[in-house]
Length: 359
Length: 98
Image (cartoon, rainbow over all chains, first blue to last red; front, side):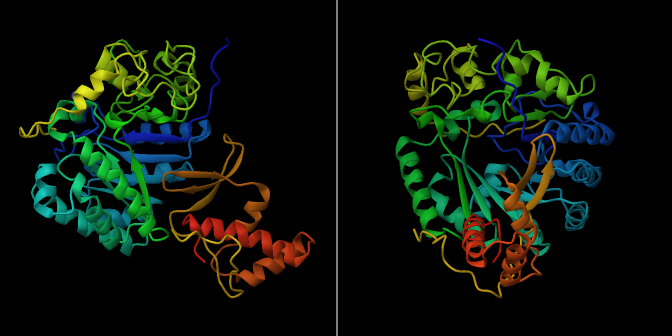
């Protein structure tokens, strides 16, 4: 077998900072958060965006942490727009004023995604670990729509809000969002730490997927409902990031380039930094990107599986977290030798307090 | 679900346009034109590009069909049928306002 085919990336997740006022217990950031001193400067982000566009990237997601914690967010947005990239802001809404939002729209922002934690203010603020966050989200969402920017509402789903999916979609409709993401928590980093506190029951998951189907029919044409599946309750693994080093890349606040936001949880991978390498060099040659590209790294049952180029063996970070071997079949797969680990873990629920994400 | 009829006619005086957040862009690295929307990318072939470029919110649907029929010296009914299907499909995906 030759070298795996090198695809061009379509999307870049720019984690501008790990600083965030919220403390969501399912945060996708790593447990070891980067501090402000190590963050890339404006000019470096501008160069990264130019290199990304030349490499084929079309969408840039300005994320964090809370991207609003960066004082140069408007300049960063301008640079992304100037590079010709479709620029999406992923925000908690806390820390972005109406004035900043107006400047971002002027700078060429294409789309805004605001997270909500629950349809009820008290429950939402409890999950976020921040009093007043919910009200702030509603106010910024209204301003996004008033400015004519398209809005996506993102709801991470777990045991405390899974029975309110209909109410959260109703809220998204009230806010005049054009799209809502019903994203079941994925268990990495902080969510892995809080897994038993977040894990829904199998009955809840089943009811929720039926509910999403009903809601899609009911609201067809008025809002797009995208769902991220609850993979601990699935038979087949998700095609994580569309295949390792195939569709997307992630730049951390300090400039490390990762094949996915959780990749640093796999020990032993060598990541390259935009301070020392061009993005094109990293995409093609960084050891971390080539570690699980294509299918040559696979073991059985993946290596001979007809689905090996459908789901790419699932998620490498999950395989590592649950089996200690990043090249193992994602244990979510019912064919995986260690699948019972997942079914066992999916049945463990705890009502202990959340361990909030804090710096 | 109310399956949208891709052949349903579009009024002559409609003024189709891309909503804010949807735009046509050229990517050399990706080998041509793409229609960009939140979390979604569609490759646009040369014909689709010519049609979408005319959806500015100013030109009426009737004028767009006339313009394409004359630019491509093709029968108006044929253009009308093809463009209707494309625009209905885009509108159904919320990539176009009719």
